[in-house]
Figure 1 (tube, one colour):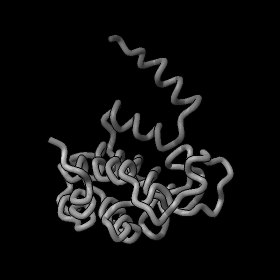
Figure 2: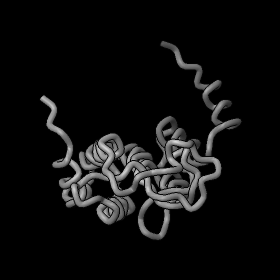
Figure 3: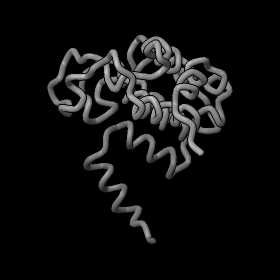
Figure 4: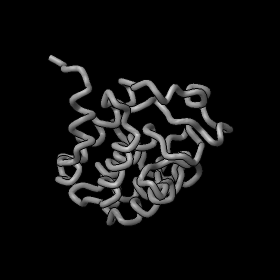
Length: 166
């Protein structure tokens, strides 16, 4: 398959978020990951989690498990570099993990406007296999090159709660 790189660049210029442009530059032009990490930090909250529309259908500013999964995508792409934000994200995920070891699908929203309806009325007291699995999978991909994420207790706990696949 041939990829029209010029068309992709034009599309990114017209439609992409700064984060996506920086990720594209990093992967396509082999640039230093610092610009992509700086763009990702625009979605970061003081608690180490991510919100602010990092998950495009979840526009509320609060840190959310769904946004964490997207942050791990960036941390995976910067390999072999690592970022302290990945470990801080694991710390935040640990703080919102439910007693059974899983993550809620979403946490309550302060601002529901612009968010998909599936995000706006979460039951934050119930674990979601989907969000726990996708977030842990992203963290495992980061853990392949980041020993701090690999050793984090949250990742072990989230992995243990997932069903075995044979």
